[in-house]
Structure formats: C-alpha cells, structure tokens
Length: 137
Image (cartoon, rainbow, N blue to C red):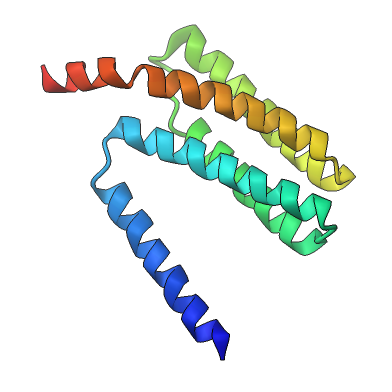
C-alpha cells in the first residue's frame, strides 16, 4: 500500500537528479559526484550502526561506484599532470578503504573516507568562482 507512494517519491527524486545533471556544468557535475559519494557514505555509516548488512553493502557499493566510475574516470590523466596522478591514487585508496570498511563493518574507515571526500569537495567548491570566470571569458 505505501510502496506506491514511496515509488512516486523515488521517481520524482530521479527526475530531479536527471534534470540537474542535464543542465549542470562540468564543474557542477563533479560537485554532485562528491555530494552523492558523501551521502552514500553517510547512509553506510547509519547502516553499520543499525547492523543492517545488506543496506550497508548497497550504500558502500554506491559510494565505490561514484568514486571509481565518476570521480576517477573524470580525471584527465594525460593533461592533468601530477595533480591528476595524485587524485587517481587517492581515489583508488578511498575505494579500497570503502571495500575494507564493508568487509570489517568498520565505521571509522567510513569516517576517514568521508573526511577525504569533504576536503576535496571543499577545494572543488573553492575554485568555483574561478571556473565561472573562465567559462564566461
């Protein structure tokens, strides 16, 4: 009975995300990836605390996919120089820690990854005005 209403909410949320993605700048898309990864990590932490193993696994898998197939794949490894190389290594480290957090049911590893993501997100948001100036020029 309630699942139909919940499905409608989920469908509405998916449309909102899809619309946001379609109209987003490349800079904004990276911000959205950071936010999505952090949200998945937060959900995983909640599921660790509740000992909800299947949901924890799903949330961690989502975070890994965002890190590996979103953030890491977006890197320009050829033109990005040392920074791209270091980010590539950091994203690999985060994905590995997320995997280990799932295996060990370790919330502290999730906190560590969220801290790394938060730092990178903050730096990315910090360059937003400069990116906007460059896009306008």
